[in-house]
Image (cartoon, rainbow, N blue to C red; front, side, top):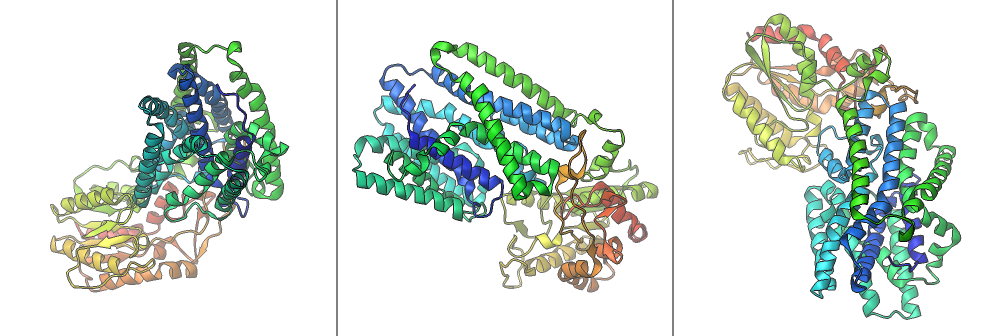
Length: 639
């Protein structure tokens, strides 16, 4: 192990972790603080590559010892963070929230958190980052995956005497691939290791620059100043929704690499002062504990956590916890070799046993649906009413299929809400739904889910082409404006825009779809645009856990006037289409039966919405109950 301490690197760690903490605290002006993670990757690439090459050229490199050092450096503090987060979840989280937290714990312990967050980001009901207690562990999982791959690459390249060339080609390939992938799947470019390799490689490249180029004092000062400027501008200017973010990340990465290359300069004294040295020394523990503290602070105390006093208290707690973790956990496991076992098998068996045992517990928590026994008996029922309606919530229906129900994610709430009526009528329904997908003839979605939605569209119409049963057609129509969809089936020569908020493609495609269904003999009930709520609904906070937390702030109902205005454009389009086909098409506007003088968000203390758009199980039952007569009339008229 190299004992060459670099004060500017310790300061760089402090800069990176402070940036991330301020970003997660949502301090105004630090919206680009997420680049602190990218700077960490550059530091890791430099130090890990330096240590591997130094040990190899000294004749003492061992893959086993490399992984022992990495495991002892990373895993103890990570395991402690996961265990503490799990325990806090057991005390404060409702079952639905606790099972999600337990799932995060499992993935963090198995070093696949980044892969799982990427996979789940493509789900229609992907959780908001504020709902994920261990979201920050994605970077640790990615780094651990880097450690599995990088040593073998460096050793092989060094044996061929081509380390510089291999690292450069790896960096270039990773950057180009990340730039390409970011255009179609930005979450893949964000979460997955191959598309972040260029950041680690940027740090590794500094080793060769240090060896080949001597920096005079002025050049070193200029390089240091440029690096500091690039990183600072990135933190202050970048935004997480910056288009094509991957190419822009070169700025903080090259800034971090330049700062390392320049070394200990006058400019770098900004980084090497005593305060930054202390923060740099506890940066790993601080990174690990900062997000769970912020997460539970906001969850337990609500809005007061985001006041200046609340933020200062959370920062103070971070400092205490991080210092304790550094002293009692980090330092204990990274003592000099003569005071600890360096046996690869012994360390591997120990860490694997602990991680797998804990993963078994957290996975059991997930499978048990969050240990519902922790709560009073009425809580599971309330949780169920405030969950998203699923087919398992439908009343048992027997009888022949007499109805087709299709559309996007709103289809489920109508299927569940209608099931008691269908049971009473002795008929069954065929349900075809695909979350977030426009089921429209000739329409494809402009998103990473394009092919999934195209397949769902084709399967739906294949089914409808084989029957002439009446259909109920449900979509979140306002989600499919001209910027969101492509329409290729039109043969009239119409020119369509690609503007947000314009619905020329939707109108044409829907007309085409309706006429196609009519030709097949279907009678059609179109469900109009559903009113939404402007309230932010944090799903994990809908229910209390064993210990109380601040509830979601009350959500005022939407006025009927406001709801009509927000749905008018879509509903007018639907009315126009229906009015020209009155014998075959019926239109029901949810606003006419969901709202009175106001459109409710809660009813009798139960939330009707699970997010801005979708209804809970209680909301689904409410919306159908309010217009059961009209639904019954359409269904009975089509028998």
